[in-house]
Amino acid sequence: MAPIEFSEETKQQIERIGSADVVIGVAGAVSLDEFQARARKVASELGSSFASLRFIFAWPGQGVTALTSLNGSEEGPVLFPFAAPPQGAAEFWAAISATQRAVLALASSLNAKACVVLGADLAAMDAHSIQLLIYAILERQCGLAMPLYPTGRFDGLINSGILAPLHRALYGKRIAFPLSYEFAASGSMASRLVRGETGNNHALQGLLWPATVAITQSPQSPIGQVHMDVRRQLAAGGLDLSAVLSQIVGSLFQEMETFASHWQRVRGSQPLPVWGNPPEVEASPREIDTRPMFDSFLLGSKNLDEVWRLLLPPNTMLELRRLVRLPPESFRMPDDLWAGIVYDFALAYRLRTISRGHLLGALTPLYLGWVASRVREISSLSSEAVEQRHEQFARAWEEKKPYLLSRWRWPDRFNP
Image (cartoon, rainbow, N blue to C red; front, side, top):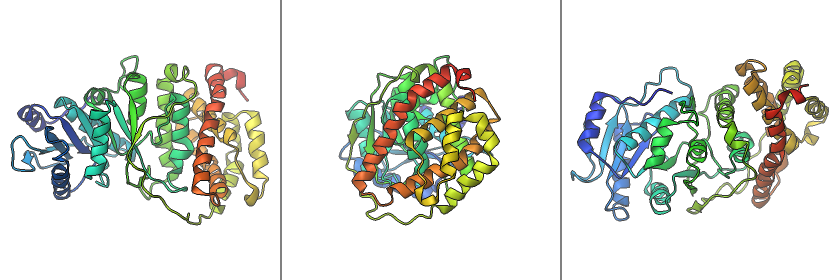
């Protein structure tokens, strides 16, 4: 990925400020008036707790270059407008990642001790959330602080069904949201995230996975998680599911290939320190009609059988054909089967068994089949039982990891 290049106006403003202690920026377009009002409120509320720190609030917009003091003092908090990277036709998460890197680059240029990156909707731009993130970095000496978002039992299923358990099994850290709108980084970690260097000193491509960079490039830097009272979905409304899976899951598969030498040495997983109090989540789950998802799975089994046979071993295909014959009310996809399917798709992605776009499109009906199974299974469970079920599910991915290792190292041995 090309290095972050700031405009001449931004470079001049960086020289004028010289340095800062904490940079807080948003990863996307936002109203200047709203951002400035929120920044003033946050700066006022944080003042008593962090009176000795200088805050810079970074606004990624166009047409404004002047620095603005938020409290009338030259040494006080400052609103710093800078030109965000051009988005063009960039995909949803690619655009977010590009702006996240720009905020981190600004923090690095200002030699900041901590950088807080927030979502462009400003839902997390409140003093309590920011204070927790800063606390994890400055007081608890974390290199990276990741969010813990409140989720209902049917929320964030791409994350809970693929991203979180796969990331946990690969890298051995129990990070609930490895791809997130909000996070905080130390000054040194911000520089690493901007560079995105691999062991071969080649810049990473695609999305920014902060925890992956932290784990693989700075393994001695602690990672923490903080509770944030913000509801998050991985994709904006109206985006096609196949396109979302292609971008997000494809990016994680690419990370697997880049850092294979690291995750192949990892066994098991470790919990991370957590700060803050978990907000309340829904008490009674809403009803979800799983029949359309089940029907999509059945249609995929008919239309994509030849494709699936290129990607999945015979035993998996036999199990899928057994599931197809079940009535909807009896349909359950075993945890180890689903984990093995995702592992097999990751391997096929690496080997380019078919075009990567078609490969990730072929994952969609399988994912919908897993969602239908999961929704039906946990609909009647208590909140405590759902949490236990999530942990059991994640452990199944860890237990299945030897299968991934075998297929990754000796793919021909398992060819269908």
